Image (cartoon, rainbow, N blue to C red; front, side):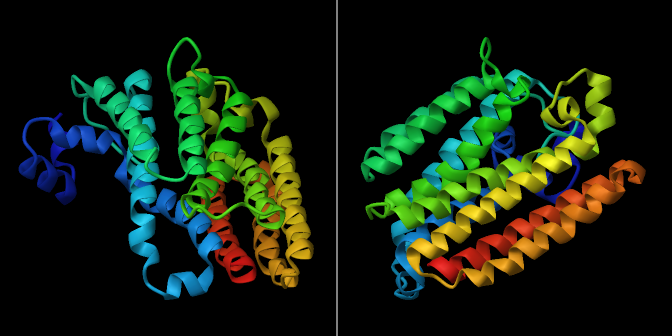
Length: 304
C-alpha cells in the first residue's frame, strides 16, 4: 500500500490532496490512457466538422461534453469495473503498481457508466446509441459470467468495433451531422486497423501469458500467424480508406505514407520475429502505435 501511494510525485500529490481512498478510485480509471482515448475520439469530431470548423474555435466547447462522457465516464468506468473483477496486483495497462481496490469501486464504476449514459441523452441520438452499445460491451467484456475478455477472439471483436470504429463515430454523431457513405467507410476502416494492432500488443507478453495460463488471441494464433493477421488487417483498412477516397474524390494517394509506415514496422517484424526478444516485440508495438498516430493525422488531412 505504501508503495502504491508514494511511488512517485504524482501519487504523493494525489493522496495528499484527495481524502481517504478517493485517489485510488481515480487511479483505477487509468487516466494515463485518457490522452490516447481523447485523441481517437476527437478524430471523429474533426472528421465531421472539418479543419474550417476547428479553425472557428467553437469546436472545443461543442466537443467538451461528448469527450468527457466518452473518455472519463465510459472509458474510465470500463477500466474501473475491469479492475474490480481482474483484481490484479502487478502492473496492468496504463497503471503500474495498482493500489488495493477501494471498497466501493464496483458501485463507483457502475455509477460512472450509468451516469454517463443519462448525460448522453442530452446529445444527438447517434451518440447516445453508440454509448449504450459500448456500455453493454463493457459489461460483457469484464463482468462474470460473460467476461468475454478471457475468450480469445471475442475480446478482439469487441475491441476492434468498440475502440476502432464506435469511438470516433460517437464524436461524429455528437455533431448531429448525418453520416454519409464515404465518411462511413473512413470510420469503418479503423475497425480492421485496430484488429491489426490488437495482437501486436500481446506479442511481448507471450511468455508471461503462457505461464499464467491466459489464452490470448496472439497465443492461440502463434506469433507468425498473429503478424500475418496484422498485415492482412492493415492492408484491408487501407483498402477501405482508398475506397473512401474514390467515393469522396479526396487525394487518397497521400495515404501511401501511413501505409508505408505500417509496412516498415510489420514486414521486418514478420521477417525477424523468431529471433526477437520480448523487449524487441515491445519496441515493435510502440512503433506500431506511432504508425497509428501517423495514420490519424494523414487521414484527417485527406478527408477532413
